[in-house]
Length: 229
Image 1: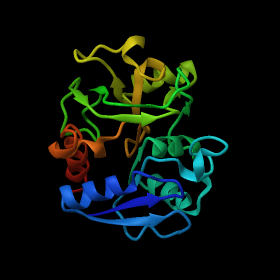
Image 2: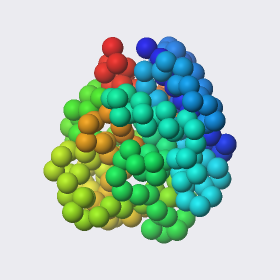
Image 3: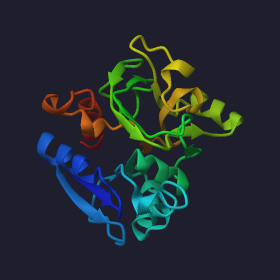
Image 4: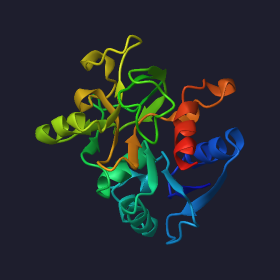
């Protein structure tokens, strides 16, 4: 089992993902430079958070044209597991692997804080170690996390159970007051129709060790490892 963590100019969470995979879970992981065309035999690809290419044009827009993304798209279309976290989610929408778009937070401010999430779909390759409707604490850190999509496609996401995470309160309630960034229907993470590509704004890699904030992100990685086993 091998994981690939992509590095772009401006990435700042690739080491968090790498350390979580290697130190916390003892798995083999490699860094993949954005200019390369080689995924080095990875079984699962992570697109980490940060500010790829300085978020010029739009967050994730320039990164979506990187050579490595050509390989990631091909890998995903063959059924490979791909995870985009924060800026990685933005890149996945920009390159067309996920529907919709991420725009400026409703309050036009960068938000960095602990955030409660509801696991809406616990039957995916990324969430099978959670329970449906489980409430977890996973931090957010973004300025462009406001998820939007056409109304008819929005309903389709829910009907096809493609919405995986929603922002919520401690009781699992999801409404405008519990959504930090204005995302439609409090969407925090989605999967593609085939269920092998996931994008999410919160950072599960930051809550896999009780010494540095909690362990609510551990089942996320355990789910992926279980799916690949």
